[in-house]
Amino acid sequence: MQTLPTTLDGWLSRLESHHPITIDMGLDRVAAVAARMGIHFDCPVIIVGGTNGKGSTCAMLEAILLQAGYRVGLSTSPHLIRFNERARIDGESASDDALIAQFARVEAARGEISLSYFEFTTLAILQLFIDANLDAVILEVGLGGRLDAMNIIDADVAIVTSVDIDHTEYLGSTREAIGFEKAGIFRAGKAAICSDPMPPQSLLDHAAAIGADLWLLGRDFNYMGDKLQWNYGGRVQRRNSLGYPSLRGANQLLNASAALAALEVLRTRLPVGAQEVRTGLVLVDLPGRFQVLPGRPTVILDVAHNPHAAATLSQNFGNMGFHPYTYAVFGAMHDKDIDGVIAQLKGHIDHWCLTDLPLPRGATAAQIEEKLLAAGIVPGNDPGAECTIQTFSSPADAFANATNRAGENDRIAVFGSFLTVAGVMAYRAAHNH
Image 1: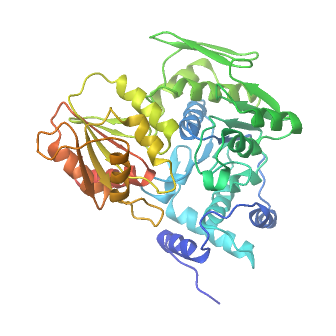
Image 2 (image 1 turned 120 degrees about the vertical axis):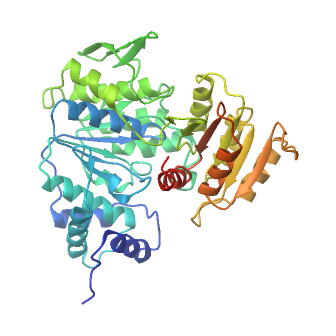
Image 3 (image 1 turned 60 degrees about the horizontal axis):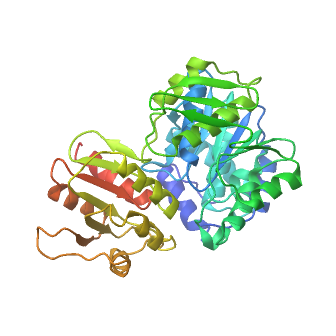
């Protein structure tokens, strides 16, 4: 009889080593274990997928429902600093002990069935939420939708925020192929909300084929705004004189509108008042999504890791006012469209601090440097050069270099991967920033 780990770190390292395929598509195994565990929700469940905007939409839903006094579970991935961030109950990360107890239950239930890290931890988090007797559950899809472990749950409302090119090796290389994967979270007869202004035909076709109740931006719900406030309009519900979400960035009204459409669908089961919506949007907080830190030089943390997110980042740069120089702390996975990210940010960055990432999937700083040079970014060698490129072995080293060189009116943008942002957050925490 093998002994089970007694710490959260012990469990996580065991899970990382036990199932070598990190992304193992297919729901048969995880659904079989879920059936053994009797995983089922009686409260409303909202599932959120999409290429970009998932995390923001989930955070807004959580903030509004908490303001309305509901007990809310929120599962997101990946985490930035601690695994516990992936399971939040009433706005607080789950404790190590609570997670360890659920890991033991999944281990006991799985028997001979092999589960990936994500499948195993997903089952543990779902069981944790069931035991917590919640009023509402919000689930963020990890990857794609159709074959994501979260999709074993039949949600009451499904949201697809945006469809763009990412994870091509698993989801396909066109918006049509990816749209079909994202639409896999839709259910017959249940609300299927899409806040992408130009949804792929494959998503529309799949919703029609299964008989989902499709809500489209511009047809079933919409938003309008001026500089001071904005309004939401749905099929039957209007929300007027709303303050802008505290999350910064160009797409946040799309995400907020999708969240309000989901709450409109659930208005009889989870009634939410106007003031609770307003307060929730103002208080919502999401680390690492165009997060502008206090102090000088200005530091921006953004987990942007595909061209669509990079385009939003460059747009947000333009809305920030003047900074003499912009430093980039940039590290990325080699399977991402790094060239596409560079193309969106070229011309917005003066000094590139490139970093290796501590994973086999990480591109090396030297590989990213080659791509910058191929994109026509020409560095100068002298200290006063308009453009420089330097390589580092860790996000912390790259950030320390940028901090040492940047003037107090400059800005430092940290982006390219969750790992890049997490490395800088850990460095700042250790240095009491």
